[in-house]
Image 1 (cartoon, one colour):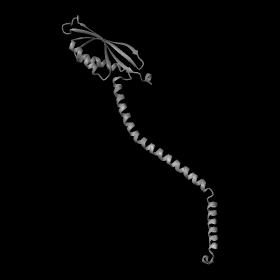
Image 2 (image 1 turned 60 degrees about the vertical axis):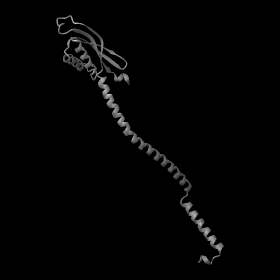
Image 3 (image 1 turned 90 degrees about the vertical axis):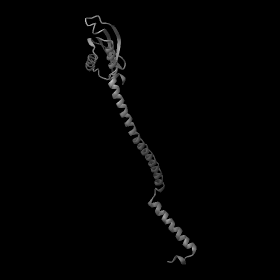
Image 4 (image 1 turned 135 degrees about the vertical axis):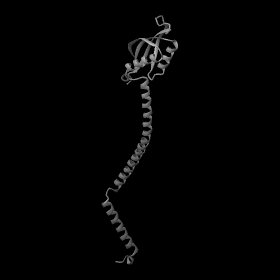
Length: 190
């Protein structure tokens, strides 16, 4: 059969018939074509949302490095602050250090008495009463050394009088004072 011998309307009928068969085959082979288009659209929207989340995650990774650097800085600051205001009393070490300082600046430590522990909301005060004899400039040097200590140590209730003891010619003053140190209470701060 030669299509060229058919009249034009015969050829049109054959082409329309073939087109109908192709459409019918397509529809019967892919019955849910419109459903599939909706699923593709939905999947594309989901893909766009996941890409946005990935970009957020990549931004968070970059931010994480910055935050870790900040954490290290804050931990170093905290370590420094814990040296100044420790969480443990360390009273024995402080007593030894104070005794060593009086010896180094030529003061005689006559009396060292541990005082009461006073609790506050975030810290405890540990005090010790000290009585020393020596020269005025030696006492000043002792206080300067105490002010330079890593730990926070306050001197309270300072009383300086003339030394009337048997060593008054070599040690002209007698000083009484309280040395107060502080201990941070982590449990109370939380």
